[in-house]
Structure formats: structure tokens, C-alpha cells
Length: 527
Image 1: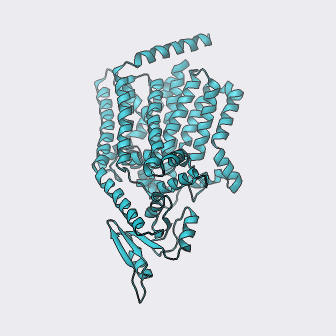
Image 2: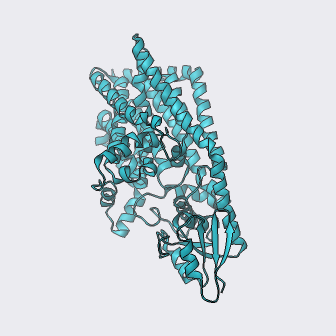
């Protein structure tokens, strides 16, 4: 009887796929995927969003890997945030040389895979081509915050969304018995989970929820061969983390606990505002660059309410379901719980209260749960009561319009971002023309210089308040500049360190030579 049910399910799936390929909504969904990738490719060519020193640090790791000089497990200067992005970019660097474009190409591919995975996951859970089109269309858009998360190789963010969605898709496929090669699927699930445990703990709520789907529907296999494959895949994926922990004798669990600790310095109202009211719309792409206007904050109130309504409705109906329908409902509930756990962890952190604008990136995984939150609204469109249909249609339209407006906002300032990138490139070209090989600068300029010149110019970070050594993530660069006999200083024109450098480099006989380029001052010793 079980085999008959599985065969029937497979036959229904095959028929649905055959019909779905030619459905107008399916064609439009494919167009949305294409346009979403094209939008980000054009942004990449336009240097949008601008690169930063964190991304340059990942680029330096990729340079070292491509030259087989170093194989870092984690972001230079810390014991967390795996360097998967550097390993993905290293082969491209080896073939074409280091550049921001080469560093971001893997991220573009990861985003494309995220849209395709979400397309497949939504189709399997909700069986609605038009709903799939709506969600994929929203995900294809991209505000300033979303583009930063998806395109900048700053550590973890481009990978976690396709990985989290992929784990749930694999779990649903295994639970519904959709895979012929189940052993490979179990091993793949473990490997991806292990990779993400190494790369970024932000995706842990979704690993747990996807794992719960497996535990509920494939528990017999997990006890035997499936469990061994899961464990083996996880160990292989997390091997860099394990090796680093053994060699450095640093407990990764203690590192994780320190990262997720709560803050007592800020009142809880600041945590709730920064983590929910402001954080959710900013983190999910509903806001303008670096700010949320009051009207854009509506999503911060609506999203948690939608999660709650969807969870209550699912719990009320799930006990009466069987087979694939129950698998879909449990996975749907898992997406809701994953979002709730992500929000809870972020609200507890000091970042939600202290640095809500930049720290909203910690909520990037909530995009995986967007279809689960919107599904009750879509279902309400089928109800007879006009009030429910109007309310649901209004919220769905507002969701799409808000993300579209936020996307238009980043497109509008793209020329300004390109100008900033051009200023930085001109400054680096000037340094090369002056034959400068060693410089001091502030953090957000320094590693950009070293990465852009393939370490031909080495930069060390200084504290802008007193010119002492700052946050130097890669200490050999600091040592090289300190050993240099005649280092230059490079500072943005608005840096508070400019008068300090002038004073430091001035003597009774001579003053430093200052070369001014748009956006920067270059200080050269007169010796």
C-alpha cells in the first residue's frame, strides 16, 4: 500500500511538472529569475554596491589560496565566519587575476541558484504557479541592503540563503520519497549543513528546522544508513572548522555563544525596535539605502503577525493531514519556526540595539521564509468574504510595491556609488604612479589598496584617533609597513586623522608633500 502511494505521488508530480512547464506563470517566473540575475550582473559591472575593506580581506584570502601561500579556515583576524567565498573565487583568480568582479562572480551564481531553489521549494510546498511567480518576483528585486548581502564577499551572506533553502528542499524531497538516489541526498544534506556550520551560524535555525522535517518523516533511515550518511557528510562539510579547532585549541561552541550573547547596556525597547520594527523591513529589502522611512516600517509589524497567523492555521490543520500534504505542512511550519528563531536571536543581540542599520544583514535568512508568511494571504484570496480578499490583496500588493520602491531607490543612487568606486580607483592609480609600495590608512580604505594592487602596495591600518595600529586583520601586512623606511599615508578627505598625520610628518626643516586626488589626501615624506 505504501509503495502504491509513493508511485501515485510520483505520477502526480510528473503530470504536474509536465503541465507546469507550459503554464504562463511558469514562463513569467523563469523571466523573473533571468531578470533578477541580470539586474545583479549589471550592478556588479557598475560597482554597485561599492566594495569595502571586509570584502577586500576576503579577496586577499582568495589571492593567498590561489597562489597556495595560505589556506585560511576563517576570515582573517577572527575565529568564525568561514572563507568559503575565498575558496570559490580562488580558481577564478588563478585564471583571470584578482578583481572585485572575479570575487563576486560566485556570489552571482549563488544568487541564481537561490532563486531556482526557492522556485522549486515553493512549487513543492504550495502547488500554485501564480503564488510562485509572486514570491520569486519579489525575491528577484533587490534593495541596497539585499544587494550588499547577496553580492559583497564579506563572509557568509551570499551562501546562507541558497544553502538554507536547499536543505529544506532536500528534506522535503526525502520526506516525500521523491529521490531515486536517497543515499546521495542524505549525504548532500549533511555536507551542506556541515559547510554552513563552518561558514556562518546565522543559518542554524533553518538547519535545525530542515533537520526536524527529516527526523519526523525519515527517522527509520536516520537510525541506520541515512544517519551515517548525514553524519559523514556533516563532518566533511565542517572539516575546516574541526581542523582549525583542533590546531588552535579554540572551542567553536564558546565562540558561537560569545557571538550570540545578549546585551544589558541598551533597553529592551531599543532591541525590539532595532530588531523587529526597523530590522525586519531593512533586512528583508523594504527600505531605502541605510534608512527606513516611517511608511516602510509597516512590514516590521506585519511580518511577525503573518508568521503567527500562519503557524496557528497550520497547527490547526496538520493533525488531519496525511502523506505529501502533511510533509508540505510540516515543512511550511519549519519555515515559520526558522524565521521566528532568527528574529528572536537577533533581538537578543546587542547589534539590534546598537548598530541596527548595518546589523540588519543578520536577518537575511528571513527571505527563505517569505513564502510561508505570505501563503495565508494568498489562500484568503480564494475566500468568498470580500473583506478578506481585499485585505489580503492589499497586503500582497503593498509587499511587492515596497520591495519595488526600495529597488528603485538603489538604482537611483547607482551613479553616486560608481563615482565613489572611481575615486578609489583613481587614488590607487595615483599611488602606483608615485611608486608608493607601503602606506598607512584607516580601516575602510586600507585593505582595498592592498587587494586592488595584488599586494604590490601593502597597507597597514591605523587608529584615526591617535595613529596607533588599528584593526589589522592580516598581521604580515602591518609588519611589512612598520619595517618600511618611508611609508606614505592615505586618508579620506573627511578623516579626523588628517591633522594628526600632518603634524607627525612635519619637521622644523620640511613639511610632507601632499598629493590631493578626489576624495583622498596622499601624504609623502619629504626625506
